[in-house]
Amino acid sequence: MNDNFYDIAIIGGGASGLMLAANLDMEGSRGIVLEGSSCVGSKLLMSGGGHCNITHGGSIKDFVYAYGNEGQTLRRCLYRHNNLELARWLNGHGIELADENGDHVDPSYGSNGMDNAGRIFPASMKSRDVLDALVKEASENGWQIESGAKVIGLRKEDSWEITLVDGYELWAQNVVIASGGITYPETGSDGSMLGMLEDLGLNINEPRPALAPVYVENYPYSELSGISVPDVTVIAFSSDAACTCKGKAARMKGDLLFTHEGLSGPVILNISKYVEPGELIRICYNKELHELPRRMQRILRERSRGLMGDVRTNVLALLLNQDDFIVSGVDEHGMVTSGGVSLDGIDMQTMQAKDFEGLYVIGEALDADGITGGYNLQLCWSTAGTCADALLAQRSV
Image (cartoon, rainbow, N blue to C red; front, side, top):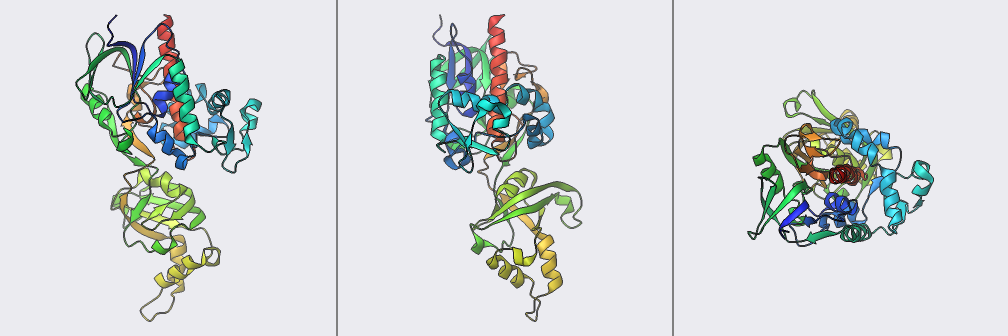
């Protein structure tokens, strides 16, 4: 046996790669996980502010809408390996679950035990517990896990040839791309794998940060840093509509968080993938002035004053419903990546690239991303499970 040959090589030791390894027993076969950074699961440890919002409660049918235009394409994966399955797997590996209020979530009762849970976390609120469970199960499944093994070359001959940064070469019958996107490059998610896939001929939609804070010109709310306003509507307009306010790109509703430098909170994170510098976003606070925080009321009044120093009530009323800003930037450290390998080129029943036998793509490397709330880690689980099914079926043929 060639010591450098593997039946399956997973490129990327993040959430999706480890979820695949944790769901695929390599008995009688050789499998390796190649993580480019110094340790596996670095970004998973950061998820949910270190608490790991692992999935969301409710019916999996409702998840489809959390992924925008890609939701219908992902539906088969989501249904096959759903949020209840993920919750039960975690419970089976000693991880109790809770909602964001700390109330116990019990998937043993089926979907009824999760219907009103909303965001779901490990009860310990520690991402490390989830990571440790995945690594332990992957190791017990016979996977060789290598950190500091950054891939710089990938090409297909009789099998897939993989070149590491130190010049070391290995071969694999099947390669699974689980390398993530472009955000947080220090965790290994630097987008370099997407360039290699494009060179192979896969269609790559331009990656960009998503679930990210947004910065605007002439930001007036720095002193409100840390203050949140619930149930705000934010509308994004395309760049050619900044003056006419036509051609809406997106509309989101949720909680808005002011930071020292810009806008954040769920509503901003969810709409961030749709905005570009130079474009206009409109904030509708959906409240009367007296319903807003006092300091915010004062700032709005100051912004409404005329040349004589008087508060113009018509301007104040307009700001409450049309607080318009020009986007100056989107934080490059988005929680996830929008863009990546086009779903058109992936067989969603197997996660195999349609024109590349033995090449699979899962998780954040795909051009699919969800809103905040656990949907993106669920996507990692669902695509990893679908891929595991296909590789197991291939082995049994």
